Image 1 (cartoon, each protein chain N blue to C red):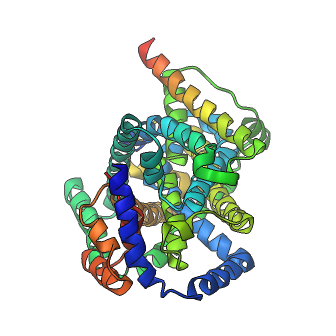
Image 2: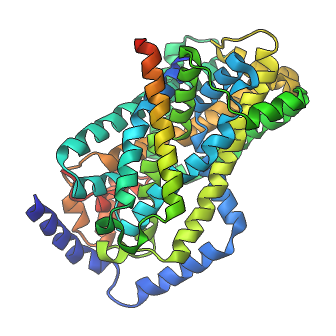
Length: 387
Length: 65
């Protein structure tokens, strides 16, 4: 096994040093990118909104809405509590990716026995698949508000359209569109304020955690933790860091290894913005459902139409549309991220071969397979020696 | 909508072991070199790990009891 890794690594070095055009180019590129990173608070904000909004996926929106409807403001405290937690896990996995130059599961594979790797891998794959399915289901339920056709057809249509957009569409363009559509979720902030919740109750339930040891309460608590800290988020994060380093021209593992204090600081800031945005939306979803549905005695949400009621204070008749746009937008942002995570984790037999080709050739092959995705191409390099 | 909550619960159970691994790895000098976690990052990380483990265990307990 060790033998295989070293062989692969040697292969990769051989092939990939051609790609980085043996010279001072990589370091120049590197400095330029770092300069950019230092400059833009706006850029950091933008990036943060993307990761943050994609973390508030349809399944998260459903979970937060249920939390608000079932317990009113009772679970508001989870937002300030999970904020540092989210920051911790995402930053840790990002640091791991930056310093080791590898994705999360690659590092596990290299340093831990198989009985650790496989259960973790399988657990994440199952969790991701279920969440992606739940997200597509949630998007379809939101669509059904305006499309009077059977749910099964909508589910199939949604799944197919995500897939085909990924394969044939310009993923960058689509992501940019949905990134802005996801800002619709900010409507929850307005809705929560317009619903005029009792300020004293809001403050006390925000800062004083009250845990009830009932099945219902703990289920929602675990679901909130699961959706805010979902495994895909940090699997993805560690791979994104690797991908960014590759984009900077650090194609060889020994170039990618290690990170400067400055780089770590920049990613810390990016992550803080992202998590803040995601957390803010979470807080106001719970608050607005708590001050509308819960107050009205609707403690159980079973349909998208019921969940959309939470937006009525700000949108009135348009609440359904706003809800549908928000859910579909975050769904489109989130589901492709899983589809990128799965191949990052799973072994692909042709990886070694691709990785050892000169850069342009490798690129065209990856383009053939998945035209949209730069990350798959780099995932193939970072995971070239998966079991 | 129930399915959405359930998917969250499944994620909630797959997260704790993975986070434990991340904590062990980011404290491993062989992997991180001089970038092993600082004291405060460790406090934050381990508190998080403990918190999500106890939430999952608490829920398991209410299912069994």
